[in-house]
Image (cartoon, rainbow, N blue to C red; front, top):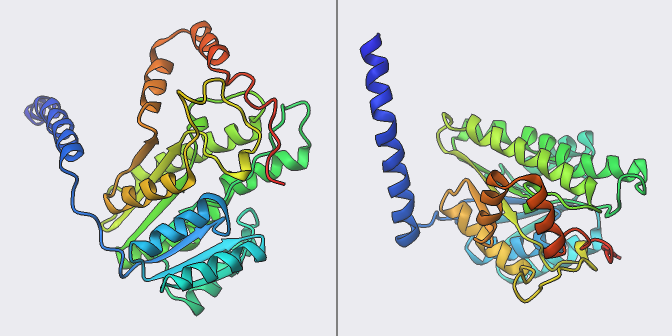
Length: 302
């Protein structure tokens, strides 16, 4: 037994070097992209913002069917018509992902009307945009129900069939604020941190499940209506991401079976700094970059 342990101990660093080199090679020579022509894709919050761009991107890359979930029928209908004009079959269902019973009911309706979902994109999110003491209790609960618990319900609704088919992908549109919180968005940061932990645990849990994978995307501030009014101190150095860029990189990550994606790549520096700098230094970075006060002009979606 001791020789077995010793062999595993000696082999471990070799495996680590191999995986690092393999990842570096993949950056230079990207792997073949996954064919989406047989995939049925469901996008929550698919009527507008990043969700609408995700629907477009999946359709452009040949997805078989697109299914949109959201709470506003007008937006869902407009996006559905746009996707159909692209030549892709598209359906929409009104669903509040924060409502567990509604998620399970609409998931059953999707299976009966459209078929099995093979790619689930958890994109729906809300932000209250106030400090803890200025926040309404119901608004705080709403953020947690939609941004975090909603992923529990949607994943539980569709993952079992993916495991049966040995074909599926769970995607989470998270935020870099899950790793580095800011004042004035305590509800959003908390829910996204919880969501990140959920996806990290889920990704590890799927390692022994053939054909079923997960992707978590953590983008920097994106120029959508949801964060309207948010101001960065140095917009030329740290310009907000375009939603179409986030959508394109997300679909590429799914096609390459990439587990975690930080956007832009400079966000990796933030993760490293948080690991090595003292709290006082991190506080000064927040003040210098303007993230300490960036929510002071927040307006949100009108």
